[in-house]
Length: 280
Ligand code: ADP
Image (cartoon, rainbow, N blue to C red; front, side, top):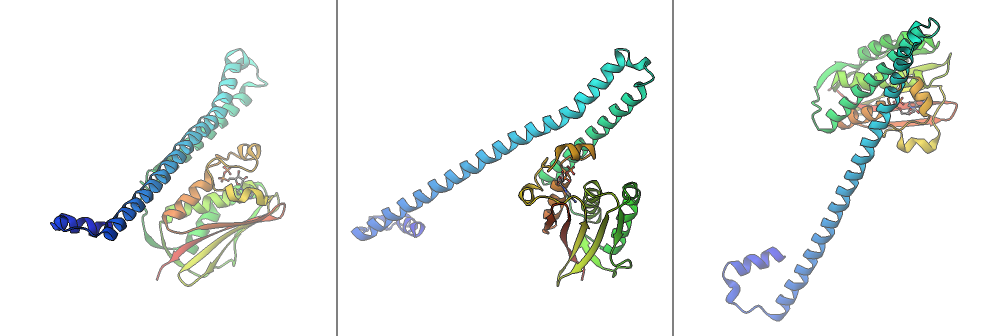
């Protein structure tokens, strides 16, 4: 190789006459190496350009997302200042709407903070063995009220699941489950259901969160886990969504070296399935 040749020369063999064919080989090899290096640099440059445009697009999205609730609050407050405060028909309503927009703003900022911490590589995984079945029960309890408001039956199947122990960061996995379950209610039908179940493979177990809600058109599936990607912006906003839930879910699972898949049929329902390492 070229390094061997150069070392050979450095070790004092340079006074030896390099035969024509060796010199030719050397030149061909140097040429080849330079060419490879050039290609690598071009790739590197292309990658940096992509990161840069990604960053710009993200910043644009963030300010757009923040603007919506800020403008709303601005509108309500100014209307109140301009006399609305004395109008018993609107004062309470406007204050409540302003408060709701501020809640949305807080939710966006919290999710952004979570994402940026994850992307800075600062996510420390608190690996522990824990009982997955218990966690599922806790998650169902947390969201029971919200589900009942839409008369959605939220349950684990089978009702008394096998006791399965997994090795992961319990609080992060809770966040994954929270986001999936909340989505299943937000995009679920009234009187529908959300079923959580577990299946096992040799090393992992797979958690399924299945709803019979509005479903997702196939065309949207590839972009679903992107930050701020929503199938229906208005619906997501009305439901208090930030568009970051699934991006966070994907991040958490990737930092566990696990993955998530989605199967969906428009107007029929959606199943999200993700893996976790089983504890041995
Ligand atoms: P959002 O805050 O908008 O819910 P997510 O990142 O959690 O953001 O989800 C992205 C989009 O994926 C949602 O806006 C919605 O269009 C779609 N989605 C997520 N979960 C479901 C589901 N269970 N059924 C139908 N659509 C879903």
